[in-house]
Image (cartoon, rainbow, N blue to C red; front, top):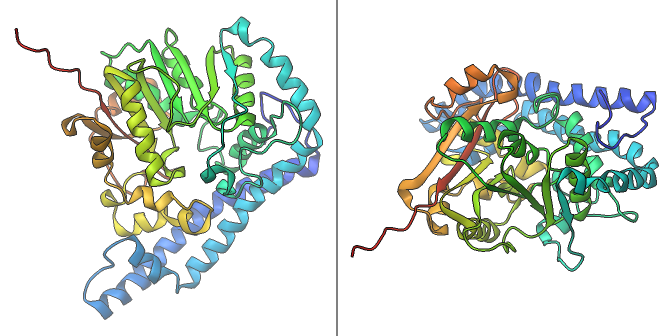
Length: 404
C-alpha cells in the first residue's frame, strides 16, 4: 500500500500494515465470503424457499428477507460492516497528524493552478444539502464536507486514501478507472462528438473528472461539488497532474451555468447519493445546460428492474447497512422515465455495460464498446474476475427547423 500520490502523508509502519490488512479483508469479504453466501443461497436457501412457496424469490427484497435468517448472511454483513469502518480507521490517524502540513502543501499546489490553466472557485454562502451534512456517507466520519483547519483538504485526502484501501485495486492504479472507462466509451462509441465543454457533477476529488480532460484534451472541463475540502484537494490533484480543470463549489440541482453551454454533462456514482427530488432536479438542470446534440452520461449502479433477484439483493446491501439511504430508492427507479421527465426524448435514451478501460488493451476495449448491454453478477460491482461498469443517459435532440 502507498500513500496518496498528490499530497503526501507519513504513515508509520503499523499504519501501513493496517491499511494493507483492511484492504485484504475487504477483498476477502467481497470475493470469498460473497461467493460462499451465494453458494448457500443457491444450494440451501433458495431450494427451501421454492419447496415451501412453489416458486423462486421474486425480487431483491424477498431474497433479503430470506437471507437475513441465514448464518452466512449475518457473518458476511458483520465482517463487511466492520471492514467499512476499519477503512477510515486505517487512514484518518495519518491525516489527522498532518492537517496543517497538508493544507500548506495544498496551497502551494493551488498557487500553480493558473499556470496549468485550471481554476478553483468556492462559495462560502452555499448551503451544503442535508443528504451530505446529515449523513456520514459511506460511514466516513464527518462525511466529506467537514473542515478542520484553514484551507482544509483533509476530507479530500481521506477520500482518495480510503479508496486505495476500499477498492483493493479494482479502480486501477490511479483510482480513476471509472472515469477513464466512461470517457473512452464516449470517445469510441460516439466519435462524432467533439466536445468543447464538459461538466462533471458531484466530482468530489476529481479522480473521474481528470480522465475527461485527458481523453478530450481540447475540451474545457469543469467539475462541481458542494463540499469545499474535496474541491481544494481536487484542484491541487489536477494541478499536480498537469491537467487544466475548473472546479467550482455548486449544487448540481441549481447549476450556475448558462443554457446550452456544455457538450457533455456527466457524473460518476453520484445519483445514488441523492434523494429522488434532487435526482430529478439534477437531470433537469443537465438538460438545460446541454447544447442541442449534447450528451448526458451517468456512470451508476444498474437498475433493479434489469437485474436478477439475487443480484439486486446483493447490490442493495449498501442501502441497508452502509449509510447509503438513497441507494435502493434510486435503483428502483425507471432510468428511462427519469431521463424522459427531464426533457430528453424517450427514443434518445442510451445505456451500456462496459469493461474496465485501464485493465485491458485499448484495441480490445474499442471492440467491446459495441457489445450488447449485459446485466449479470459482473455488472456494477467490484469483481476481480471481470467487472463491467454501467452507464446511462441520453442525447439532447436538436430542435426541428420550422418549414418556410
